[in-house]
Length: 416
Image (cartoon, rainbow, N blue to C red; front, side, top):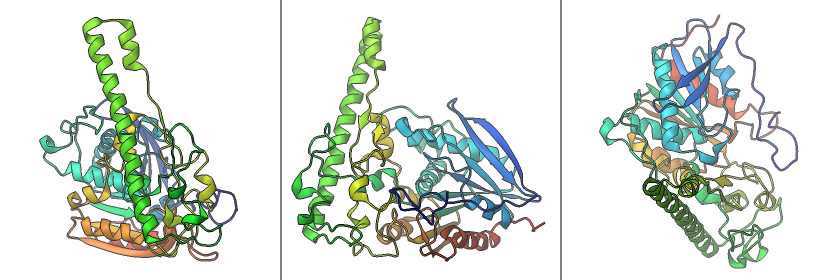
């Protein structure tokens, strides 16, 4: 599928990749993490490649990312890896995902002179989190998830990459959801419940029927943003209460040995989060203006998509909510992690981004700790499509920036 055509709700999300060099050699590898999980990755390399670029995303399969052939053409090997939660993020714990990243970094260190991580979208915060933790003395690394589960980062081999590329990174899954969760949900058990004075799709609050841009007042936006934080805080409380009940059941079983207590400890709680595609910036283009088109990452009608099945964090365990989706509890926060990113860094903005807005990017760039920091903007949409028909894609323009940046710092293989 390509990102240029179609008028459906999700049009523009998928892009066709180009041709890989004929001499590309591809191999599939299964790795074991330090905590015993199994993850898989695909290594594509060209003759003479001494530098490997690693692409990962906490939730998505990036094996066929459109940048892969362009990076191979630049003369590097490309490693695309899954986390243990790929395409099924129901129980995604970012702290565990760091152990998945670490397994891939160990694998690449054994084969290449230099390793550069490349985080696109949510992959940006994943790698920022990893680099922050990897650079710490092991005893200072995070030892528990926000939900309280132990995670042994201190005992893991976590090589620090030689460089980092952030392409259209958003501020983190939790911060992203904090900006687009609908605070007008009146009842968490009723997806149609609405608090009228907080409803972003109510014309009385400034919404205009698309494709016209909406116009929200500063007063409405202030109430709206606070209400978003309030809703996330309530969901955090639900998650903590659920985890407390599970912990109590475990303690009871330890004392009683009763099967009934064990069942209570094992019974899953699945949180359903209704309406998570309601960032006012997607429909009011005067807010933090850019070259972005009307609509969200999921399509051109957020006012409809918000009520559908698609959206961020729609089904999640309490632990995963706190670790990944809570903008108040998650440690996978780009700005929080960025001071610990001190390796040579390239930060690339896409001018039509519908997930990372200019003000977000400014905050992320300002927080980075790298002395060797390069920033650039290229025309493109969040997933790398072209802003206008007939133009080069954002991926093509980004690849040229990445090639030039790599060439000044790392060895590239000569074209065949």
